Length: 95
Image (cartoon, rainbow, N blue to C red; front, side):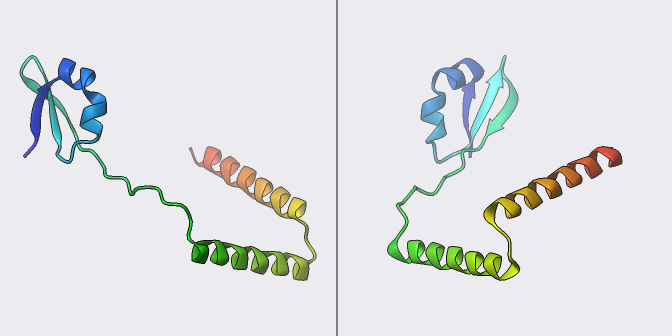
């Protein structure tokens, strides 16, 4: 069940409501104008040694593939940016 609060109270206590585990029904002049549903974000945690190792391994694999293909990081970035420009231009034409 949602907690019902007036819009002004919602504004004043927004920081508190952001941490609320329940939905907040926001009203103005007694009429519902919205429902705020807080999302629980997972708490940040520093990467574990396993995470770091997996990232180093992935980076080594990418580096090996780039060397095998004979491309540099600059080539890779340039190709990525060119592809992104082409995709954006295609979306604009479709609009």
